[in-house]
Length: 357
Length: 244
Image 1 (cartoon, one colour):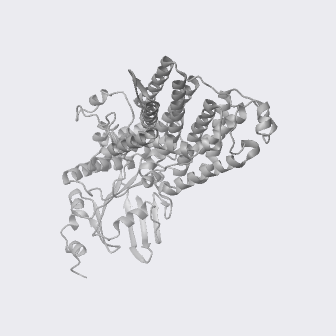
Image 2 (tube, each protein chain N blue to C red):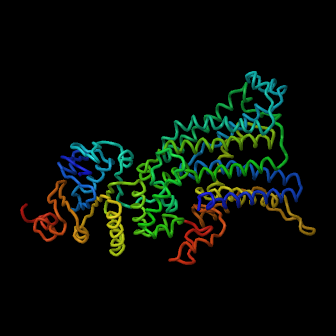
Image 3 (cartoon, rainbow over the protein chains, first blue to last red):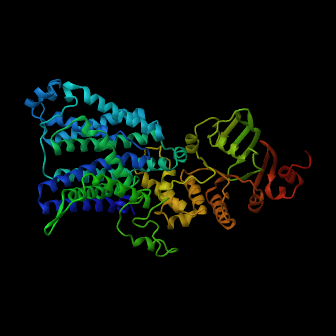
């Protein structure tokens, strides 16, 4: 049985979950709820982008939102009408000043632009391991933020870059999230993904088997840069405004905590972490705004949302220290395993959500 | 024909000499046990042969080429794999994925998966238990199965010589029996040359073959394992009385 056939149920199930969320939004038909669902899809893209590198390499990165920043501003440069750019961003070169691409073409270039920088940074950073690598990626985030906060003529420094066409339909975001899931899945089952995961488990043994660890990490880093850049472009189109601080610490830690809660080593965990935490955040927001039952309105005090969210995250990590999915993926139940496993009938060695280690 | 030849091999860690002037040759298809008490330099010798620890002096030839000081991945590609002590399996990967990594991730060949399929079947034929559980995570295997897996991974490189450091470490005796049974069958089937480090000489006497007894970084005895079994020199090597 080929590796694709054996693992394809994971991206299919995740895609179905995303489509189901989109259908709920369509059925509900309310505009604020639409925006909530768009936010979920955006976070799915970003967290899956993080998973491609962090999940497979085991190296924690605090810098990936920097690529989202690169993607977001690239989308702004490519899609804001030239008239507005002339007053807002007078330092742009002519070819960029006169460009006005449709949002999807802008997103493709934004993804490539982010990948270019990921490849260049990665070439230097991927030799590092462990905490040194994490600190270096954080420094990279700070560098990108500093440049974008100060290069007034092309980024408008810390003031908002406005005029980015706003896309309110949920479908482009859904499609991009599905693309991110498929890219992550294909990478994970590829030879590069296999080599990288081996290096994550036992670096010495992997190197002795011929795995070029810096190279495999660079491949994943660049690929995750593509996804983060695409996410940044769509992020810009979802709100129509970018500032350097849109893509800084808050977004970094929101997305990382979703990945950790879902399970760092699992693609399903990346998606479910976003879906579960986002739903929770939304539910708490409604409660803060007040729910009317009959004639009485019940509302929780303002600020309780953050506290409740924190408590839930702690509880999840106490119960499942490796995240909701740990290292496993969502799959179809596989009855055929028993047939291939006559000595242990009934024993499925990899149950759907069993927690390993 | 000699497959592996060591001449005057010396290994030092700083000022400590772990292995001193060791010379021996290993013929293709032979099984050689290196035994000796703790600190005899057995593992150091193995690590030097695999290229993990560069020797301080002497020379190592493998398949007619000088491999002294070469990188471990180069040596592995030439057909000499080492199974290190402590069973380093890729715990979160499946058994099959562990074996696939063993095919050598260096060669940029197309269709590597289908090419690896032949090797995979050969390993599964040797260790049927691995085939039964090929899609389970390697970290969930028992110690004996993990030992079989790392040996299987070494076999995936199509090795001519496999050097194994303490295959019986931490295994129940009957599981050790199984591992050895497989190794012996494999040797007969694939004309594999085996270099096995064990602390105790009991296993070597049970299996038969050639045995080198080391102590304090030097070779004390070299000969037939069974014949050596009851000799006084052997007891002297372990317990330190006799000619010393």
